[in-house]
Every structure is written in C-alpha cells, then in structure tokens.
Image (cartoon, rainbow, N blue to C red):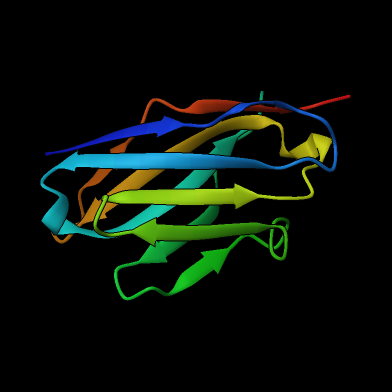
Length: 116
C-alpha cells in the first residue's frame, strides 16, 4: 500500500508560479513512477507530467517549457514547479504513484486556480 498526499495548490494570477508537492508513504520502495494529472470542471483527468524511477520525464505539450517535474527519492516526494501559469491551467491536480506490480495509487487532489 502507498499513501499519497498532495499540497501546494492555491490561487495565483496569470503569469505567476506555484510548486506542488506529492508526498508518498508506505511501500515506497515499490514505486517506479510518479505523475501529476489534472482535471478541469466537466473534463477528463489528463496527464500533466510524470517521472520514472530512472529519472526520465514526460510532459503534456500544453505545459512543456513551463512546468518541471522532479523527485526527491530520499523524501519520497515528487514536485511540480509551475511557471507562467495561464487561466487554462485551472484544475484540480492529482498525484499518482505506480508500483512494480503496476498498482496505481492516487492522492486526494489539490486545487489550482489561475485568475486575476
């Protein structure tokens, strides 16, 4: 079992920055992938970025160049640094972890609102 807790969301003006944190606990040695997804009202949950255990990263085209995903293995924490935020980035952001047995665990989500 892995427990996932997100933090760092909030209200920010367009062009601003936020850093989201995703803390994992429990069977953390089994985690092979951590990722950030987002879900806007009335829309499906979509991948924002993920990072594999070897350090490889993937980004959605809409955030490439603005968002950076990173991972601190010692703290079992993943981060999403979001710069140049736009109103269309407004969503609930969810962190997930995938284990060696391909089981996915989700956090409860954190709201990000980009508005003037």
